[in-house]
Image (tube, rainbow, N blue to C red; front, side, top):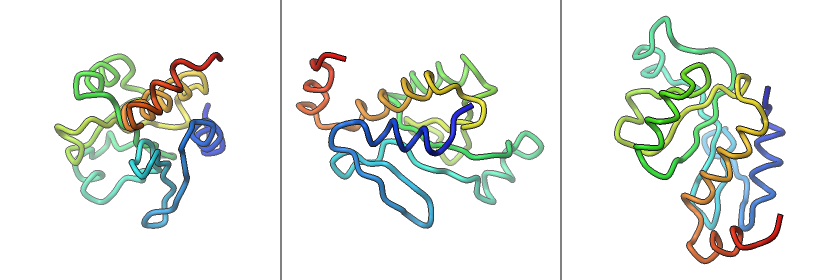
Length: 129
């Protein structure tokens, strides 16, 4: 089970990342482009999801493209979901309490790579780990 502290630790370990608050929720950005953010459900989301609306902390995460989004949604619908607000948009919503930390780490790094400037992403990928 992952926490906001895990999100913060993973995101801020990536080069060029900053954290800020927007509309009272946390978001992490690379060179001023958001890649993961806190995303509580809004009234329209709750209405659209009905009885299927989850409880608990929700992370929004950019993905490389809509194909990746669809794959994640199909792979684990107990962890990943979406709302009509994100239709056609390369992002997924994540039930933070249902994702393990290793999977969260991979998701955040991929989100960062999708938004980071090309040179910064190449330097990150080339660095030894």
